[in-house]
Image 1: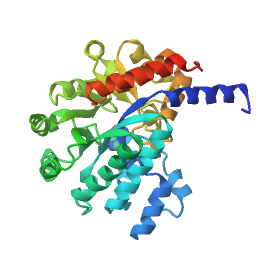
Image 2: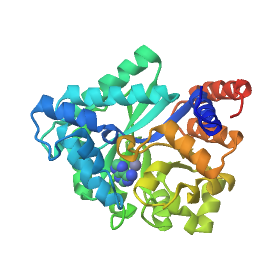
Image 3: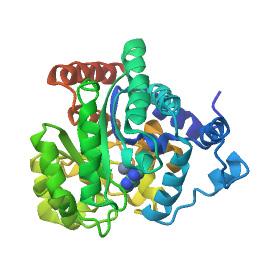
Amino acid sequence: MPASPSAASADALAEFVRRLPKAELHLHIEGTLEPELIFRLARRNHVALPYDSVESLRAAYAFTNLQSFLDLYYAGAGVLLTEQDFHDLTAAYVQRARADGVVHAEIMFDPQTHTARGVAIETVFAGIAGALREARDRHGFTSCLLMSFLRHLSEQDAFETLEAALPLRKQYADLWIGIGLDSAERGNPPEKFARVFARCRELGFRLVAHAGEEGPAAYVGDALDLLHVERIDHGVHSEEDPALMRRLASQRIPLTVCPLSNLKLRVVDDLSRHNLARMLRAGVNVTLNSDDPAYFGGYVLDNYVASARALSLSPVEIGQLAANSLAASFLPDADKARLARDLASVLAQCPAP
Ligand code: ADE
Ligand code: ZN
């Protein structure tokens, strides 16, 4: 029995969202490293941690901006050493995502975070891919990989990472289909990576980039025009430029928005002032995602529920967000159509919360 009417409606909302087939399109696998797993892997790998408990580590997750988060996030990834570590990390994410009704995930990973510590890029690919193939074969959970370059490093470093990864392309052709760009945005504009993205485009990769998270709307336009990306990760600063907003809406360019991330990194000071509902209502192809759920206090379902409550999203709008996530995925058209039909039939049967 729910404790109160508001608890009852919260449960009904969560159950409604859970039942909608959804894709998660903006997820850093290193950002799913929960404090408990950090401690378990540190013990397994004999890595010393500067925290004496899970609680004290979690207490350090009080971020003031993107960089304050990135410092802890790169340090946390230091416990990932073996193929088994990357496998366990990925398997834990899949289990959590499936529980939220995610049926397909497009997963970013940052090889440079690991190769800089002496971990072979082959180890990273093998561990993540092993878990994703198991998820596909055992549960029908589909996914793909977006290898992402760290934008605080040089374009030359990105080129070297691409060269190191390309010999693995055939072996991971079922998963590795795209390229992303993440890390510290301000001062590292899209143009810094124009040549390496041009090479990736020639090679036939799907392209995405973080833009307009902390950076200006101009970075969103430049990611589209200079990097030729198909989706923008975050993009919440697009609203500063009405012409850009019209372009996003008319071309149905997807934004992979991450509300709880924006709240934790102080991109917005209150979820009730997040612009995702306004952008959705202006016809922008907004999707909801968790970004780095272990650090930001919520997986996909939490992002939907918190946004729906803070912004009074209607059941139709919640359904639209789920539909957008399927349409904006890199799945083949036939799979998108099948999932869209599944979603429509769930929406037709589900009592609205
Ligand atoms: N890497 C992991 N999470 C990120 C974010 N929110 N922005 C930029 N780079 C990231
Ligand atoms: Zn991100």
